[in-house]
Image 1: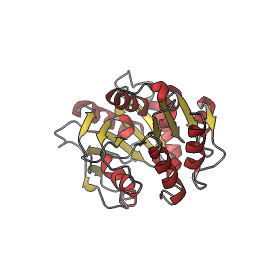
Image 2 (image 1 turned 60 degrees about the horizontal axis):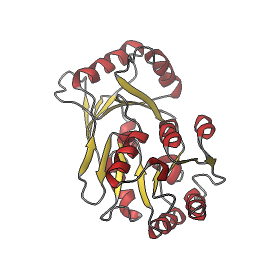
Image 3 (image 1 turned 30 degrees about the vertical axis):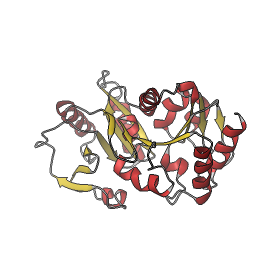
Length: 272
């Protein structure tokens, strides 16, 4: 078999605009699995946030895996056992927040402390909407001075114009200490250095004895670029951002509201 794994982004790719995985996409995933292909959710979301989606489409069974936090966590989907985990050091996380505040004092920040625990500045009420599944424990704080541990990531949710300004100001001071990436139109994240979805896929592929040439990746946004470039076959969905389309091996005709996974699976199986 030419391809042994499909690593798919969730939001904007496998999910439709209502943040649901369609019946058509679910059937396509089962078709791929029945053909012996591993299907892995590879998302910026936390594993706990991905768990419900995985269960609904049969990706929580023994032998299934997930990649969360943009490649920062690789885990067994059935047991939750973590195979790989990367974190931002406490001191670095606090320095990043200081730089954010110096550049844009009114932007509220949040930190993923654990898979299911987010600490956020008071006033960041949009996180309550972001947590519409009610799976995250949210603690609102005045500041992060009492932080005592290393963290998973820093997340900013705000107007794109503000986030673009922060990104452009901070890209010259990163100094190879951390990764900064847009994971949505209004979400900017700060991750451990060299963490991206491609790295997570590489770790899982090595664990499973699969080469990157045998991996298909499928995504829509800036944080999918590395995995699209480094997989054996990189696919951009029709609604993807232009920079992703430019580096993809293929761009689907269907978008995320038109069961694009059907197109992907049919094409991959047709290449066998």
